[in-house]
Length: 217
Length: 109
Image (cartoon, rainbow over all chains, first blue to last red; front, side, top):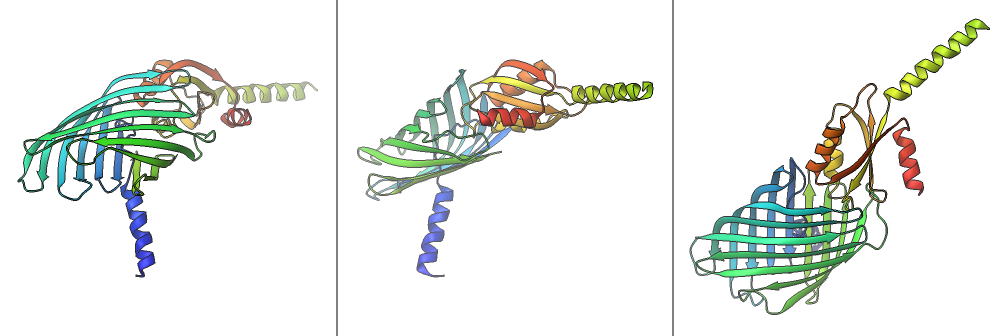
């Protein structure tokens, strides 16, 4: 396989393995959600959830974190429950508050397998033209503790229809605690969705790929 | 002349019955802003025995269901389905207007 083709294939796979973990963690009653995110070389996260009811979902995830200087990494596998704290269905908007928590196992550089707890929450507000969300995700074990906070603001450049392709331009700001990344990681993303598929990709200020794929079914 | 009148009357009765049997449900729905998130509405409605087709308009906050002949979905069931999909049902209207006409009307606005 040529280098160029390999690079393209790798890029395509990376896009597929990347996703915006800021989508809603609960799809709909009896709905399943698969999410994959590639976060600028700092994080890779995969999640799978099933919602027995419209107000909660259960599932599992895997998170790989690597600090920006490549001094250490963390691999966390976890089970999680997501809970819809409140939803506001307004005439031309929807707002949500979600909370989640779970338990898993984590392996960090120079440490053996430890029990790891996780908790977090998300608030979002969305209209046909405007999207905003703020998410916080905390992971803790006896070997480490860190939090990832993500803010997204998006606008839709054109009016999309239910069966058409929706396009959003999204600005993302993300902060990591626990010595993973110093400062705020800023990214500009393009988000597309049609039917049950959501694809998001962009670039950070450090010129690194940030992307996500999500599928609801 | 008399037989033509009877035939026309019978045709009218049958066509009216056919129209009434192929009713459409129009629902006003709050929170309908994201096509990706609204997939659950279509999925749930299509699972109903009475459903022939579904149309969703984000712009008009509208969900329309074409019913199979002689079938219906109760208002309470519609409300539950929308709630389970994550939305709020604000109003229900039954009409004889075909789904294709509702779709065309919505998309032309």
